[in-house]
Length: 68
Image (cartoon, rainbow, N blue to C red; front, side, top):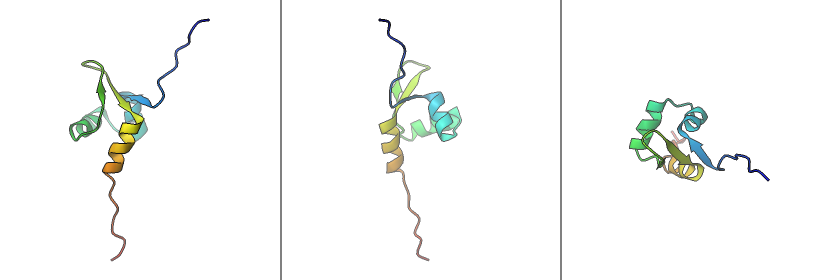
């Protein structure tokens, strides 16, 4: 029985994160410098865990005051 390739569930490449969020690579790089967690696979490859992305974005969430 041969094994077929299956992508890791809940793990995204830089390209996938950029496409998902509508960001350029430079914008994603800026978010990393602001603390966006990632896994450095090598000098050119980084991976992002879905749970880490959600937790980080939730920590940055802002609610505007609707009472004026």
